[in-house]
Image (cartoon, rainbow, N blue to C red; front, side):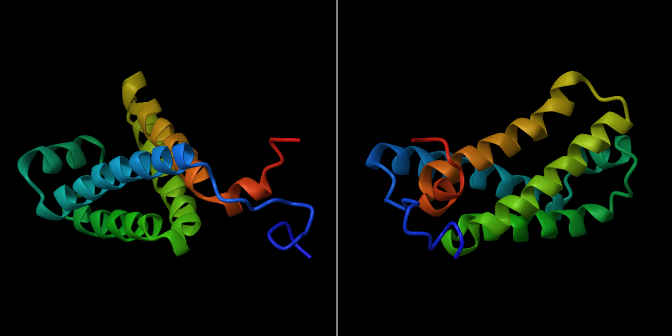
Length: 138
């Protein structure tokens, strides 16, 4: 028996306020990440410049953009949202490591981590099965 099927663990639906907040926050994050992925596919001059400054071949932006879009899509679909969050956490960890490696400013280093926390917070608010795994109440 696991946490999702254990009778003592509640998987009650989230409150309407939590559900709406989680969905809105998730929607904003998905839109932002999707736009970033699309920009990496389109390769406008600012993306090419940024890739070069970060030490990446600008042609690699297409593969990175496809990866980001795939992970974001997994996060956006309720059934695969946890897998998407796990994969996006890894992606954002790589972004953090890249900015640390090139000596980026504090904002550039912290921003991917903040996005990761927001991804999980939004998922926590909208997903009762995830809340059931974390004994935060009672």
